[in-house]
Image 1 (cartoon, rainbow, N blue to C red):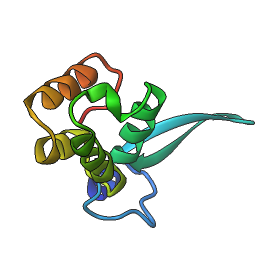
Image 2 (image 1 turned 180 degrees about the horizontal axis):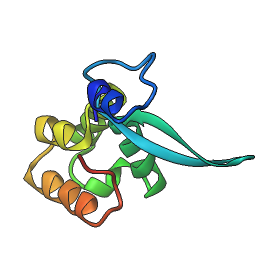
Image 3 (image 1 turned 180 degrees about the vertical axis):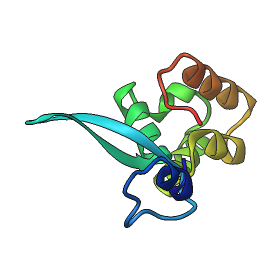
Length: 105
């Protein structure tokens, strides 16, 4: 969701970048479950790392490094794979999103 969509839901959007794609990232705090809003790409990067790293997409090391760099720069997974990856990597990314292992858009 972008800043305007979050504001329409009544959420505090101070300090958020207008065109960035945010997703909720729940975490446990002392007073219960809290929710942060984070860039989708950063959440996807965290999820990919938890699953064993970017190599789970398969393909050449160079393509994987470019995809990973795209995520670090704020691209969501499908954009990064479409730009830097091959057809098999795109299919694998779609499978991971469809399986709920990585946050989709």
